[in-house]
Length: 132
Image 1 (spheres, rainbow, N blue to C red):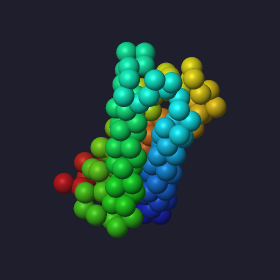
Image 2 (cartoon, rainbow, N blue to C red):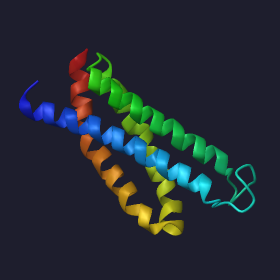
Image 3 (cartoon, rainbow, N blue to C red):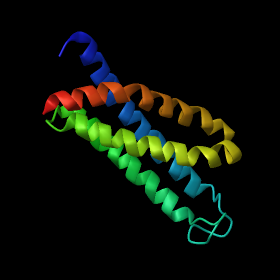
Image 4 (cartoon, rainbow, N blue to C red):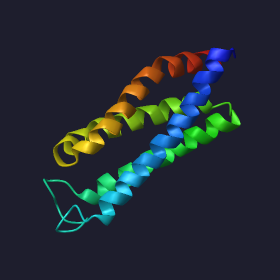
């Protein structure tokens, strides 16, 4: 691994840690601010908010696992990071519609997360295909 790859490796590790922390913080904030008048288990715009919150916590758990795998340099670190990138990107894309409408200040960090995930995909795919 050369110097540039080590820097990207460290950036990905730090990025997954920050993305996981931000998504946990955002979902905790949504639960505490009572964004849904009827409650988490009542339908809101033909959706149950509890599933969105659970999905956010699962995505942030995946980000933490990827960050940990990159930190300990496990043999499956790039595969795990690639999987976490996929679920993180899909969560951000799905949540971005409501975030732009309801919480426009949070649209900037979510957009940055989506851009960084897209930029990291070629590196992760290349490193994952070299691994086996």
